[in-house]
Length: 194
Image (cartoon, rainbow, N blue to C red):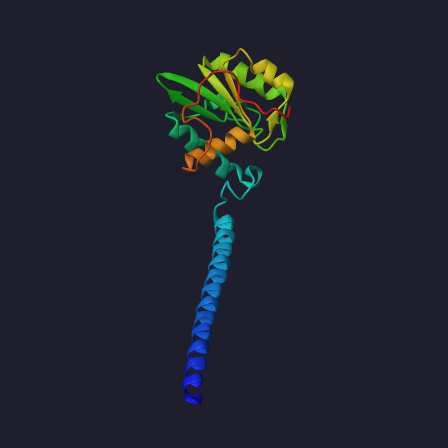
C-alpha cells in the first residue's frame, strides 16, 4: 500500500512541477519579448523618429520636409520647385504643390512654433497673390492665434495645426486617423486652444 501511495504522490508532484516549469518559461519569454520590443523602439527612434513616439519638433528640418512632402504627395499633389525669389530664409514659401493644373503654396517655416501669429498667414497670402496661386497652406506643430484664424477665414488658405498635421502624417504612414485623405481648400483647420 505504501508503494501505491508513494506512486500517487509522485504523480501529483510531477504534474505541478511540470506545469510550474512551463509557466516560468512562458513568463520568461514574455518578459524577454517586452524588453526586446522596447530595445527595438529605442533603436528605431534613434535612427528615424516615429511620429507616434517622437514629438514633431524633435525632427530635423530635412526630416520634417520629407514627411510633409510625402503627406501632400499621397493626397494627389505633385511637388514643384520653389520660385527663386522665394528661397531665402525669410521667404514665405517652403513648398510648391501642383494639382489639377493649379498650384498651391505651403508655408511651414513656423513648424516648431507653439503659437503662429498672423504675420505668417499674411506673408503666404502676399506670395499667393504675387504668384497667382490657387491656394495655400500654413503648417505648424503648434496652433494659430485668433488673429491668424480670422485672417485666413474667407481666403483660400488652410491652416494646418499640430493635431491635424500629426493625423496627416500618421495617415500617410498608414496609421488610422480621422483625417480625410484629400485636403480641401474649405474653412481653415485650426486648434481650439488659440
